[in-house]
Amino acid sequence: MSQKPDRRPSAALIVSALALVVALGGTAYAAVQLPKNSVGAAQIKKNAVRSGEVKNGSLKARDLKKGAADPAVTVLAVNQALVPITADVNAPNRTVVRTLDLAAGSYYVEAAVFVENLSGAQIGEPRCFLRSTGATLAGGTMGFYALLRPDTGSDVYRDQFQLDAAFRLPAAGTVLVECTKQSGAQSVSAAASMSAIRVGAVAAP
Image (cartoon, rainbow, N blue to C red; front, top):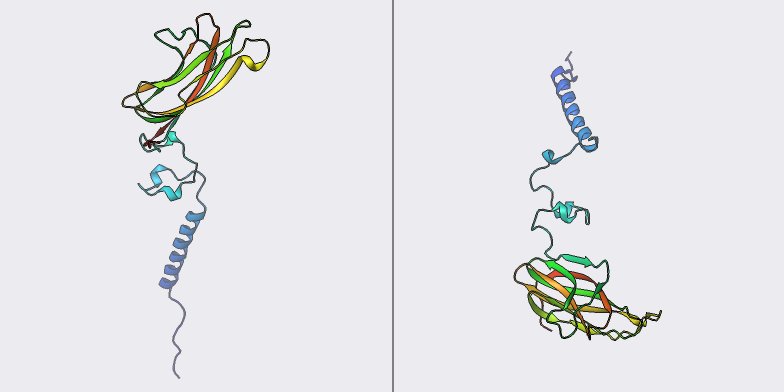
């Protein structure tokens, strides 16, 4: 009578299979059961995280190294109080109402200028201008003249205007809002808020 072959697995095969199951199970466990906050800079390969792996809006400018951010930047300056306009139209210098210091570059600048007649007896005639220490690339509304009635309790004694222009600063410089008044006897004040957006180039109109 022939003897049937023994089909039972050997002890070595059983040990090998168990080792494989444990190894695979351990890997799967590690992949899905990592403790919270257990992965840090030491576990991430260099250049492993690219733009596609970063959630939009999750990074701020302070998270990026210098020069890595978009070249377009916005700089703001908000005035806190009215500035008395002391220079009349014949004065050699205008009254500086607001300044905005900028790094070298090309900028589109806007200024919202508020003017007010403080006199209850005579009119006020302020003139305000937007200028810079650099070159003007394109002029929008770079100045205005206002005729303000005396302060009698209504809003006719004050007004607001918008100025804008594009400037190029070859070196760090300043953009200014300057004002004068028609005569020294007038009592007028002004305040201004400014914004500057750095641009790569300015096309001629």
